[in-house]
Length: 299
Ligand code: AMP
Ligand code: MN
Ligand code: MN
Ligand code: MN
Image 1 (cartoon, rainbow, N blue to C red):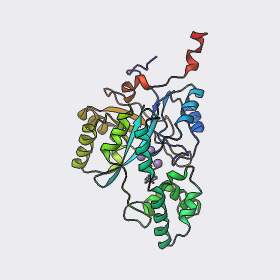
Image 2: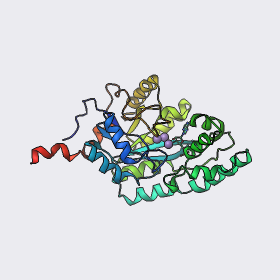
Image 3: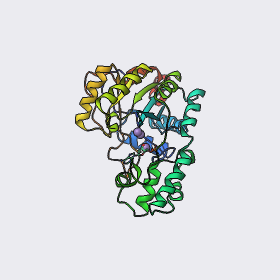
Image 4: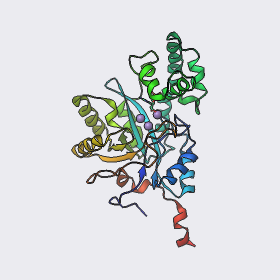
């Protein structure tokens, strides 16, 4: 049974497991989402679909509707932009190749980050970060941040990013990720919907943001995150207006990474503002519904 678009739905279509830089397994995330009242869930690990089989099975076991998901790292206007893909075929070979190419280079970048931090007086950061990695192909800044907190250098991961891991800081290594058009095409050619993730995070000028939205749409992108853990209430409204201006559907997701680090828990977000088309209305035929609810009718 498709989910009627008009019914407010507790959808959480953005979160991370140990397969990228989250701290919970796909199974624990599914259980936590379900306990928090999530009705439609997607796991969106960075540049990696390796957790999706487990996520799909766990959603089924929890009686939660489910979409495939991923969050692709893109470089646009010399800035890292994240593009979420939803509802794609996880076995699509071109998408898998694209993600593998995007992951490639994370290892070298991490070694360089370790070398830079060593020059700044912090030894052993690469080896330290590796201890927090669930998937060796997906070492990220978050793993360095956890090491720096654990070793007492900083109070929390936010402080690590401010002091060490962002542009101009001693542990920041610039990196070139996928191209916007490629990421959107990998998703759409695998029959998914591409979504601009947390647009308020990029600090673009109005012109750059207009260029991002225009080019994204021209490449076949169809949605934007409006209600996310990293937007303020005012940003929900400004991106609702931008979604309407560009004719994009709207998505909702916590971007949950860890019970200890994330301010927004799974499913604990306001509903999408009225008048927007929810992204799940575009994906009705790709939502996998738990068969458990159908069982009595079939008995
Ligand atoms: P990477 O893909 O290795 O560049 O790491 C990016 C990840 O770092 C993001 O997905 C977030 O999980 C995390 N991150 C980025 N900025 C911050 C921040 N200011 N505070 C905490 N985590 C952050
Ligand atoms: Mn992350
Ligand atoms: Mn992101
Ligand atoms: Mn994310």
